[in-house]
Length: 147
Image (cartoon, rainbow, N blue to C red; front, side):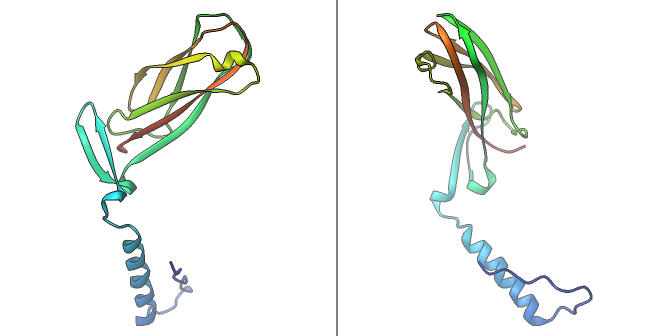
């Protein structure tokens, strides 16, 4: 898409310049199509399924380090939590996956559970099924409607 040149201070706005602005806005409108593949469906517990343009949906992805070179015992758990950068309007759909950030195979034998989700964050626990030294984190993806 072509960029509209910024006017100089005091420059009179002429028809050519207004044409460039209108043309750039039309190009932008064309690039945000109404095709069905440009829509996101978010099925929330509180308001049900919401179909909205991708540009109106909120996607949040992040991670939280849970252990860093720590010794854990089998069947032990450790809580984790993450706040979203900004709030969602309704409780979002959230997934959490473990990541072995170290070299120990103990990090391959974990289970992640989400215990609660709100419009502002997510909480959970990671369960270690083996004993040993481990470094783990949890990757979070949340999809919802922005506040």
